[in-house]
Each structure stands twice: as C-alpha cells, then as structure tokens.
Length: 115
Image 1: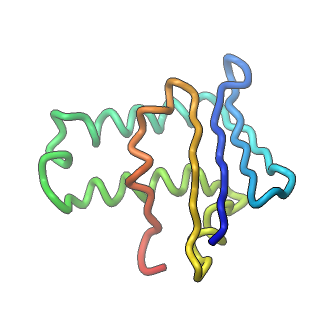
Image 2: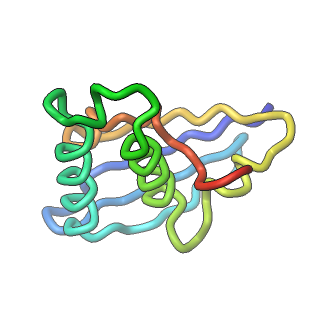
C-alpha cells in the first residue's frame, strides 16, 4: 500500500499551493488561484452545511457530487489522484490543509462512476 501526503496552503494572498509527496519521491507542486479555493469553499458551505438538505438525507446525490468535486479539485489537470485511486493494493492519503481548507469534508472524496 502506498502512502501519499498532500499539503494545501496559502502561498500568497492570491495563490495557494498544493504539494504532493509519495513514498519518499520528490514532491510535485501545483499553484491554485485564490478564486478556485473560494469557489470550493462556497460550494461546501452551500451543500454541506448543517442546514443543507443534502446533509440530512442519507445517500444524497449532492454529497456524492461534492465528493467528486473535492476529488477533481485535488486531481487537477495533472491528474494527481487518478493513479492513486487506481492502485490495486490501495493507498493512504494524508491531507494537511491550512485553516480555511481544514474544515472541508475530505472524507467525501470520490471518483465519478466506477473506479
């Protein structure tokens, strides 16, 4: 089983950085615009707040969509998560996020469709 460490943190007031390390290999780094982070946080507040209908309904489609959106956010154009999720022996993903992103429901991470 492979272990991956993903860090998401604010680099400047307008940019965030994602850093992915895997089994002692050099980390891969990707920049994110603050607007992309703000959009994700807004989506989570709308769909995952304690007042949201999706939160109250077991198996709600909106929660599955939110899990897919979180995975797409981390996967990015570089497809960082895709190989991890396809690993037959499984993988451990440890996420370290700065304060604004720490509260996101990372446990919902999901790939759209069958893996």
